[in-house]
Amino acid sequence: MAARTSKSKDRTGVPGLDDVLLGGLAVGRVFLLEGSPGTGKTTMAMRFLLEGAEAGQRGLYITLSETAAELRATAEAHDWKIDDNIEIFEVVPPESLLDADQQQSLLYSSDLELGETIKLIFEAVERSKAQRIVLDSLSEIRLLAQSSLRYRRQILAMKHYFARHGATVLMLDDLTTDILDKTVHSVAHGVVRLEEMTPDYGGERRRLRVVKYRAQGFRGGYHDFVIRAGGARVFPRLVAAEYRRSFARGLIATGLAAFDGLLGGGIEQGTSTLLLGPAGSGKSTLAWQFVAEAVRKGDKAAMFIFDEELGLLIERARPLGFDFAAMQATGRLQITQLDAAELSPGEFAHLVRQAADDPAMKTVVIDSLNGYQASMPQENALILHMHELVQYLNRSGVSTFLTVAQHGLVGEMKSPVDVTYLADAVILLRFFEAEGSVRRALSVIKKRGGRHEDTIREFWIDGGLHIGEPLAEFQGVLRGTPFYPGDRAPARPARDE
Image (cartoon, rainbow, N blue to C red; front, side, top):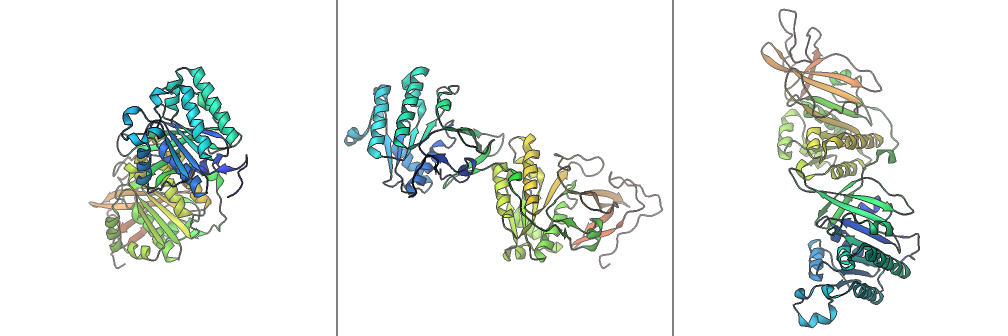
């Protein structure tokens, strides 16, 4: 085991949290982990001790609020094994004492003065020789202290005692007594706050924030996290500026000559493209064309689907010439179906990053931003999250295709979220009526870094994607109510043409 110095850090063992803390918890310091009941403090604290046990360090869990049986049950729920390197020192009230044989190993917190309780905690530390200590929870000590002055003096006494023994200490506070008391904030070397939010619909959302960390930096802001079987997992907030990968910027062809012509040769590698149009106008089908072409060339592609059942999508795409099941079998296509009601934006960004970390990954489709928006606990943060994610993908050399369904079918349309300024290219799709038929129009209204056609072309989906000639004589196609000055509208070519 490596020597522990003042500059060493003890890893917490919680995936993602050490990244937020830039390495872990400074050895020999006292840290505060606070949050309301149910936010995950005990789960993270136990993982902290287990991580130390795996490294050969002794751990001590001092509990004033939960029983040892409850703590062991928590560990079993996550398939964790508490071995001899971790001691649970339990302080329970008399009414919890059911076995007379245990009387000599249990302490009655309700009958003890604060000084006696602190003394017994110190004796447990002396006896265990623990290098990692968890104290759960400070609310019990605050109640015993009865005054802010006495409480602060006892916290300071514990801090100095732990410092002499070189143990890394994690104090838990459930904020059930006085949430405005910042005594421990000023004393602790670092403070991590856990929060739980309940949206109007869907599962609870958890996030954490590092309030302070003396003498070192950390990843600021809120970071989403989840608690599932196996423990907690933190998804560090994505900062695109920290990532950049060298790659060659070539043009990505669509495999359709007319479509490539409309795009001025194709889409530039490492850029983002927005497919904008009403529901049913063909946005997903156009995105599939880029996916199929990437796989055909030997690259990898990933699709993140919010709006459609996966099996139905695969069956619907097959008659159009997109055999996604076969593409998946080759390992070059990854399709992930997402449940917006159970997903946080941080977890979604983590899933996309995992896919993009593969150097062979060249194309990512997010279908749609309407579904992604539904997964956001605060709608006004959507633009910021998407900005960082798109920038990260661009810097990784991944071409991103985003679909947005606009409200309405014809006439004036509105988007639920305006991300057109984020995209390097914007492809606009429209329905229009001609000779009693509903038809589709396609145009490129924006493309950074290259020329593109400014025409409006008709397209249709019939055993595949077909791009027609420019609608040169129509007027008002983008409004959905075109006017044709001639006697007869141009006919769509037959399928065999």
